[in-house]
Image (cartoon, rainbow, N blue to C red; front, side, top):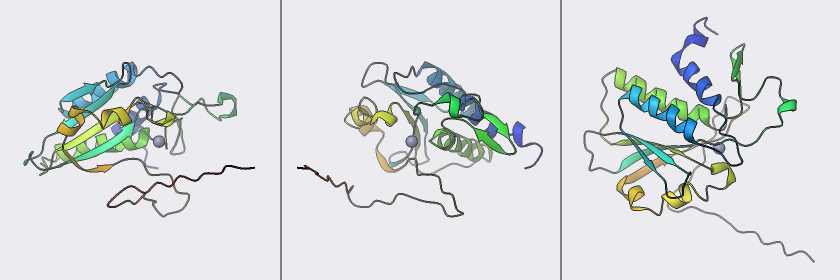
Length: 200
Ligand SMILES: [Zn+2]
């Protein structure tokens, strides 16, 4: 690891986000919103916060494209993380301990890392003076880990969501133990099966 690894703003931003205890159940998202508003301010991006259900905020940062009438690109992530058995951890799960290039923290894989990658990618593109043709929305949603009931699944039914005019979306994948990256592929229509096991 290069010696400046720990001082890389992308790394410190991730560690700061991991230190927010947005852990299920009954998450208070206030600290996440404060943190994300700060990030948006640094990027110079406007923020909207939608609350289709009380205390279940969806924060959207928007980077307007050169042709804003075109369908937009959505970069989505969830703010919450699953609970921990703290005694089983080598390092406390909400300290974002960094050692030998490894960051230990609940949410490091699922999925605060992805959220920060979106933010840092936008930061670097903007710093290079790049403008995108399409509008980019970065959305941060609550309660994915308990099924998204009060979060994204409500938001997609709203006029506010329709107004984002989304043409394409990215969201979390999953970690891979090899050099291969895994993607979840879908086209045309989502394909979910219901398996019924009535037993005897
Ligand atoms: Zn996840």
